[in-house]
Length: 67
Image (cartoon, rainbow, N blue to C red; front, side, top):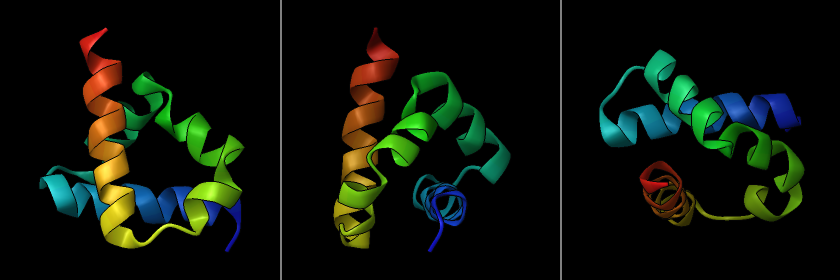
């Protein structure tokens, strides 16, 4: 899976996870820096299971959006 496909995959699954549109999740990922992290840490994140990935996103966004 390419980095771009992985980013799209994560946006779609996270949008279902938090029950928001993919457009809202894309904006959230962009604002928080998570979209860039999905590219730079692709190798590490790509190997995570879906449940772990969703938890990672929850934790990351909770920290980044508080600042």
